[in-house]
Every structure is written in structure tokens, then in C-alpha cells.
Length: 83
Image (cartoon, rainbow, N blue to C red; front, side, top):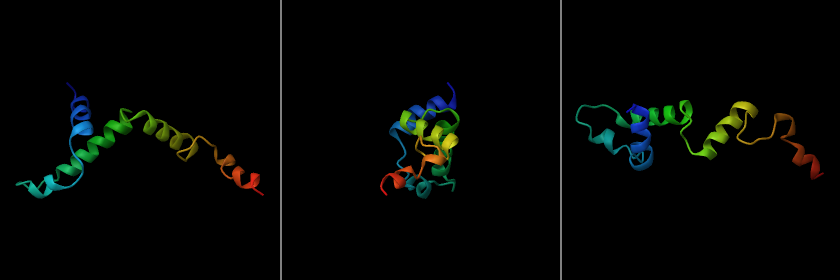
């Protein structure tokens, strides 16, 4: 079982709420929250295993440089329609 499958099933769905309690309680002074957040980023961005709405937003940011499907040229058309 790969780490991402295990991680995505366990942490992304039922575990960490990013309260930082694990970091404060850790007896060897590591920061598990940083590890959890980095693994979440990897699963979401590299493996596209985020919710479908997020994946669409990421794709729009990559192609249109904004979370919406509108190209840069069309961003202010709403303003011209209201004049």
C-alpha cells in the first residue's frame, strides 16, 4: 500500500484538524502538523485526489490564472455591461 493511499484514506478524511495539539504534545520535538500538511498538499496537487471542485479550481488557476473559467480578457466585461 502506497503512502499516499494510506494517508489520503486516513488523515484527509478522519484525522487532523490542524489544531497543533500533536506538535505541543510530541516528546521528541518534531512537528507532525507540518508533515501532515505537506502530505495533504502532495495528495491534492500531485495526485489530484482532492474533491472534484478543488481539482476544477486548480485547473482553472493553471490555465486562466484565476479560480474561475473566464479568460483574462473577459474578466471585466461585467463592468461594461452595467454602464
